[in-house]
Length: 507
Image 1 (tube, one colour):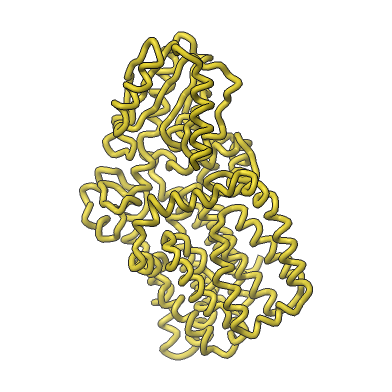
Image 2 (spheres, rainbow, N blue to C red):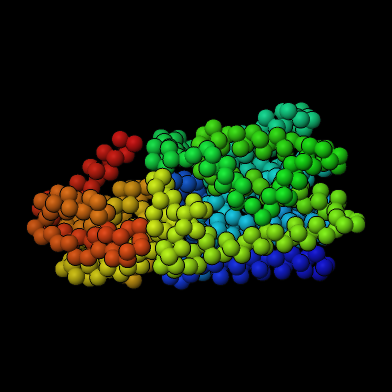
């Protein structure tokens, strides 16, 4: 093993160690993680919220025992692989050992540490963007067709993981047309690679067509409830913060792409960045959608700086460049990761507020960061649903119906009874088992709708009781109430089936 490979192995070990150190056992899994894990029980070529790749990974996690360790292992793995791909990109650009070390440090001590704490499609998304750009560089350097097919494969995996990959094309296509790399359009292999990618993503496109393109409905829902609160200035500010410790390196990469002669063939990357960021801004995308853009520019920047900071007093700037990402990480350690108690966060609220971390998707500030509040109360909910289920005279004819996917997923993940909750929300609307006869319902109701929902549902059952609620005062779901409805006066299955059809038709 060469010295550089030993360095790389060290960074990978450090990456895994940090990802687990940065998680406090006080927190449960996050709302979205439950949904993604439940998809392993309902494999398909697509879902309302995401494409299918996450469900495949969830199936592996399920085979490994569905423990929290494995849930957190895979985003950490994708983060470690991102460091590896950046390392290989730097090697492809003929970077020296300093460039390799600086590149690994810049990627390691960045927003990816936060992103890689959550089991969501985002970690693999960043890896796919980074690998895609690495393969583009490989093709530019060699012009071998095999790299075009590799690019097509990575794009397909990225697309089947998160539709965010479309933004990559929106930025890259005009950049190719604007530079000398448009010569690729004259190559037959390019069009064969396009066909190859289309074949790989075709099952998902067919699924989307058969389901009436739910991705469009999902984007419309995001636009109405979340993206409407996106501030374009805030988006740009976040871009500076994601890799703040590496900002000089990234800016050096942009400079090198325009003026550094050895990078003349890679100039399309400069234009690709401008076009991609413009697309994100125009469509008011969430700020973290763009994180996958930056690792490749870190690679360009480190190679350039490694070559120009070779002699004399400039060599001492190398220490500054290496130290800055680490020094910036130290204060961030106490702010941006779920490694501090809710009490600590509330006591230091001003620091969190200054970072914009207390602002939720509703555009308002709250006591805890939204992701952190979404990681509390779930075990409590599952325990209390289990208890309610045990107290029902005929549990085999009981439907556990939740108001949202987080509640349903948390019950399914943490339940000791092996029960399966459902919801009319997100993908759960397709996961009802209506072959099973139901006479009782355990309802998990958001506290805002609790009284009206309880009264309305009570009319259809002989017995109705509010039995418990989430009491964790820091949980986003605080007050969510568990109600038991026993001995239905009518046909529960028909009512549920009618509600499902109505909601699907309205969407």
